[in-house]
Amino acid sequence: MNETIKFPFYAKITFILVMLIAIFYFLYIAQGILIPLILGFLFAVLLRPVMLFFKKRMHFPHILAVILTVLLFVAFIVGIIAFLSIQISDFTNDWDKIQHNFKIHISHLQVYIREHFNISNREQQKYINDATNDTMKNGKEIIGNTLMSFTDTLLNLTLIPIYMFLILLYRTHFMKFLCKLFKPEHHDKLKEILSQIKVAVKSYLLGLMIELVVVSTLTAIGLMVVGVEYAILLGIITGILNLIPYIGIMVACLISIFATLTGSTEISLVIGVIVVNLVVQLIDNNILVPMIVSSKVEINAIVSIVGIIVGGAIAGIPGMFLAIPIIAILKVIFDRIEPLEPWGYLMGDDLPKTYEWHKIKLPLYNYENATDTINIKAEVQSPIFTETTTHQPKDEPEVNATSSNDKNTTHED
Image: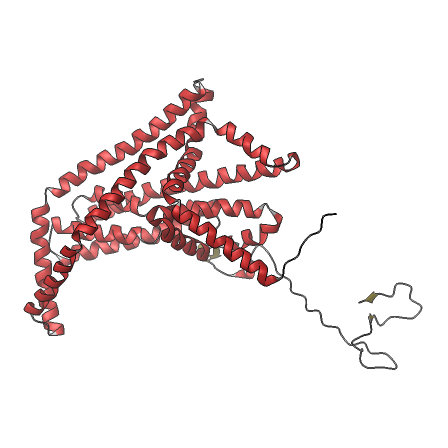
């Protein structure tokens, strides 16, 4: 006879914490293997319709359709890198002008500090020299770490197309493996989970691609209006870095500000760059993300931020990029497994996003119109007044005040 062992609450919490520590430690030590594999899986899901087009519409053999799909992906990435390389080479031709304008800005900053903080130019120069000497001491270590990171990045970029090819090639094989893991009565639930994961991943990645194009276009147009040189290059860089949540846009803004030194030393140009980035971010966060990216991936803000921080702590920038799709996949699984359903609800977001005011839709974050209504019923016994008593003892059952001849008298324990 099978008996279920029930552990106390503190034991369950201990088991959960130990399991989470083991999972995060495994992810940390295996990040070099898992990140290219996960990226290959995500891009394979995204490009599967392209492979099906070659296979079903063009009647290509399966392996040829997979090869052409991967080659198109590689050609697209190489094209972007080539375009950026050409633009960056033109940008580096203005390095002397950048240095000259940068020195002018530094001299203006030194005058401001001397007048408002009473720090002489000699003291400021001493601080700069000390910082420069410390940087030079650590220069070899920084260069070594940069080369190692660059080598790892090149290796990962090489592995991603290989993983994509293998995942697309052995897709049916993997599906049969998953079916063998579960009993036949669970196959419908498995099919539903896999289908929803495919929809969530595809919608999220397509949303990111659309967001990249729109943000790049808006930023490039805004910088052209302000009068910044290399506006197209800076727009593309901003769109790419915007894929890194929260941090990417700040780095892009700093790069754009630095690029203004190629054209002018006017502080108004720097202010214009900051305004353009702020306006684009307002449009992105309030229109593009809710409309495009979050249409299929309903994850609340606190889970997103914590997930991005954890992903960054485990695997750096790639971990931050992969945090949201991984959380979305986990939410799909949790929502369809009954014991884990509360965790799926915790990760989700059922707040109404907008309300209409004078035919204008405005943000609304309020639980008054939430999709799920929570009813809390207090178990308090009401006193019953009869001819002989005006209170109800705690140990006696509650009896409705009805006629003694009524056959439908209700008793509640």
